[in-house]
Amino acid sequence: MPRGKHRRPRTNPLTRRVAMAGTGTAALALPLLSATAASAAQPAQAPAQAAPQSVPSAAKAKTITYTTKKGDSLYGIADRYDAQGGWKQLYKDNRKAIGDNPRLIHPGVDLQVRATKKADAPTKAADKAAAPVKKSAVAQATQSSVKTFPNNLDGWIRNALDIMGQNGIPGSYEGIHRNIMRESSGNPQAINNWDSNAAAGTPSKGLLQVIDPTFAAYHVPGTVYDPFDPVANITAACNYAAARYGSIDNVNGPY
Image (cartoon, rainbow, N blue to C red; front, side, top):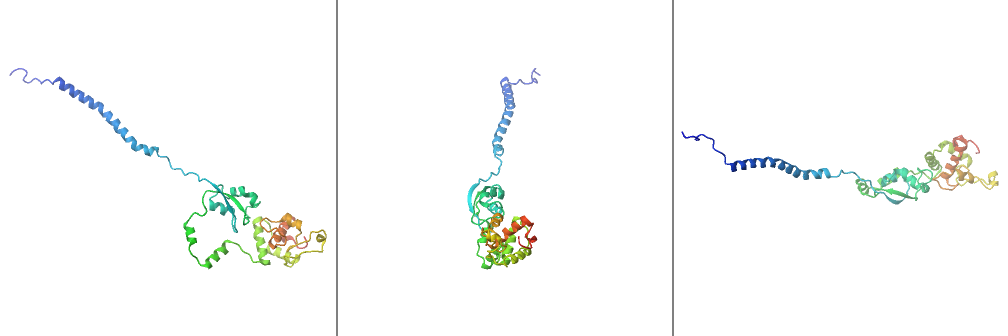
């Protein structure tokens, strides 16, 4: 057998170099492909990372002028317009127009409201309210939302008691009625032109016979400034009696 028949054939140097080079290139290419794949995946993730979190922005307030109506309250107005600072801020901004008692709101007063929403924004409740209704339903809704009192002695006393309750003035129906019957017999136009007060130029007036200086000093905000007005006369007299006697209930004679 000739020598070399079983000798391992030599690899062509050029072929071997190409194989090594190819292997080397493949080894070097793997991390490059991996890096390319990673960098290609980043743009898909970037929007999720870059997307800003949704944070509700504070509503901007717009100052409007609201004219009060019968039955209004500061809480109701603030809620209707979502006023900044609520009813307390609303009162603070309008204290000069409202007066010292935030619970007594006079109709026709112009208030400055820091509104963050429109009061007339359509709602399901508003749409429902706009639907045709029977007159009887409207009358019932009006009666339930606004307190009304008859224009007589009973109504005057009950109206006065309602206002006194809002202002922390003590007194009972019986105490007021008893003193009215003694002082004026229930006549709101009664006037005393013969006693010492009359001689001094300040006659006693009205249901509870109040002189003008006393009425001026103890007049209750939210009532008419007129000593002959039944409700204004009762509330001023009861306010005075509370300051001097603790309550109109404690008065059983001239006071």
